Image 1 (cartoon, one colour):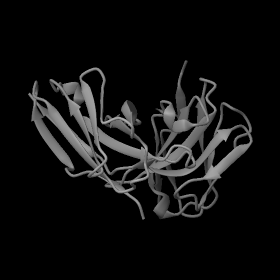
Image 2: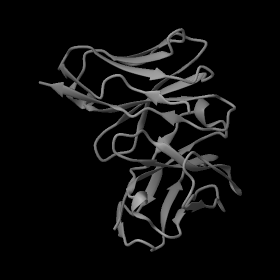
Image 3: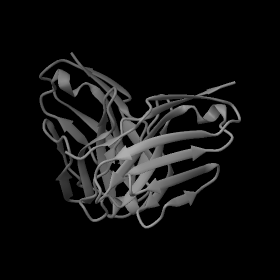
Image 4: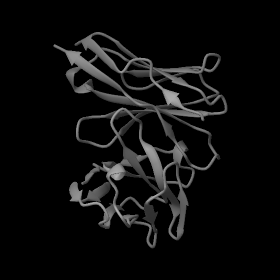
Length: 113
Length: 115
C-alpha cells in the first residue's frame, strides 16, 4: 500500500544551527502535505503546509520544500532553538479523497546547547 | 476557548472490558477524527466525522465504534478491549468538512493500556 516515511529517525543539531528534516512519500497522487510538531506528552501541532502546485513555502523560521519529481518533502528550521526539540511528522493526503491523512513515522529532533 | 479536550488522560483496562474515550471541542468545528499512535509508527486514522450525524471509517476501525450526536462531542468506544489496542489516542478537529485545507487541532491524548 501507499506509505509516507522519514529518512532519519533522530536528528541532533546545535542550538543556532539550521535543521533539515526529510520525508519521502510514495503516493504520487497526493496533493497536499503537512508538517506537524509533537512535544513529549502532547498532541501534534500544525507547523506548515504546502500544496502540490508549489515547491516552496515559508513560515516563521520554517520552510517546507516539495520535490514532486522524487516525491520528497523537507522541513527546514532556521536558527534552531531548544524549544524546537520534538518529534516532527510529515503527512500527506489527496484532497477530496476522503478526508484522510497518512502520517510518516516521525523524526526526533534534539537540540544541543 | 478550551480547544480540543480529551478524557481521561490515562486508563488501564483488562482484556474484554469496555470503555468510552471522550472528546469535545468548543470551536464549532465540523470535522472531527480519532487517531491512534503506536511506537515507531505514525498516527493512524480510526474513525472520522464530517458533521453531526455522519461518521466514517478510517484506516484501522476494527474494534472501535463512534457516534456524532452533536457538533461538539465525538466519543470513541471500545466494546471489548484487547491488548492490541494499547496505544495513545488522539482526537482532532478542524473547522470545515474539507479537513486538510484547514488546520487540524489535536487534543492532548489518552494513554490506554490493556492488560
